[in-house]
Every structure is written in structure tokens, then in C-alpha cells.
View 1 (tube, one colour):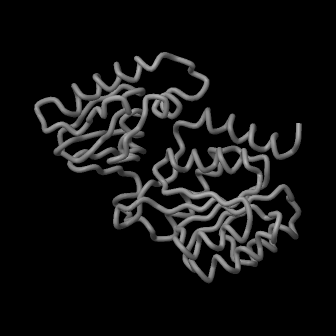
View 2: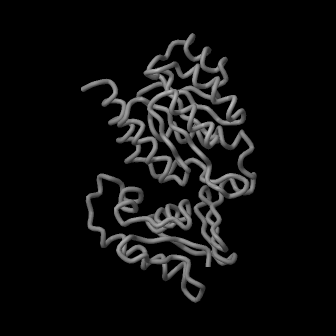
View 3: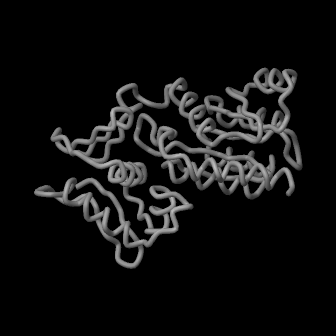
Length: 257
């Protein structure tokens, strides 16, 4: 097995098992955080891109430095996950261009090299953090969350809360309310609602929901999604304007009432 494949499979295993640690999905103006993943290992870039997208980030991926620079100029990112070794230039060179386009972006370096000199070079060049391969996906997410918090992109009152219309979820306290009325949820109902709230107005397919809430290893029937959506509707939408909607033949979407 090649090192690139090993890195991707390690990240995929961590992604499957991660349900508790998540990056903050929105910024002060409630628009999704923009993330740019710059990684030439295609499988790893795909895993990272899908993971951040499912967490509610507006995510783009690039496999080389020139593509990353073009994307950053066209749509300046808030967060960058940047591989140090790229086929056309080094991550340090890319970082200099990214800083010109997005001086306030949070930058996390990924590298297979773990020497003190390499870490110092990355931080000195302007990276905010440094993670060596192979890495645990939950650690990468935790570090990104820390960078976002310290950057000031989020209001303090919103750092632990997801808000869609009059529906509020405190992720750390694991409390949900609608119009200030508490809603009691089971663990699975909470995870399902959290996924919907991290992707407001976005239609999510049953397979996407199975992947994120029940994990890739579940292998269960999609009918379990229908069942738990019905449970949520009884608790979230009962005697209120509906927020959880079915898009026939596609999936489900959560929208403000």
C-alpha cells in the first residue's frame, strides 16, 4: 500500500468514527465558513472535502498550488488545510500567495515530516497550526475549531449554538429548544437534528444522512432515516409551523418556519 493510500484510509477510518467533535459551521453573519483543502493525495483530499462539507462548511479542494491560488483569489477562504509538499510548488510558497488574498485566513499545515525545523519553518512562514500525517480526523477538526474561535469569525454567543429560525441547539450542553420551549431528544435524534441544522436549506439525501449519523459502517436500511425523521417531526414540528420538509425522490431539508 502506498503512503498516500495509507494516509487516506487512516483519515477515512477516523472520519467514520467521529460524531462528537465538529468544526463551527457558521461565522458572525451566519453564512457558512469557506474552507479550502490543498492536498495532492486525491483520496485524502476527497475525504477531507466531504468531511468539512458534511460539517456545514462551504468547501473546495485543490490538488496543486496553482489551482489553490486561483481558487483563493476568486473566493477568499476563511480556513485553509494546506499540504506542505505539492507537485508544482511547496506549501510555504502557496501560503505566501494565500496570505495576499486572505490575510486573515486560518491556515493549518499538513505534512509527513515531523522535524522541529519543519514545524518552525511552517509557523514562521505564517501558518497557524501544524499537523503531521497520519493524523486523527477528530484532532484535525478540534484544531480547526480552535483556530476559528480564536480568529474572531464567530460571536461568543454563537460558538456553542446552532440557530435555524426559532430552533436553537446548544451542542456542548446537548440542549435543544424551539421558541424557548425545551425539546427532549434521544442521542440519535440529537445527531440527526444536528446534521440537519448544520446544513439549513440544503436538501440531504437518505444516503448522506446514513453516512453522517449512522456512519459508513452501519450498512443499514434507509427506512431507519424515515423512521427517525418522523420521530423528530413529532417533537420539533408538533403544534408549530413545520421546519422539516420532505423533497420527494431526493431527501429532507430543514428550513426556518
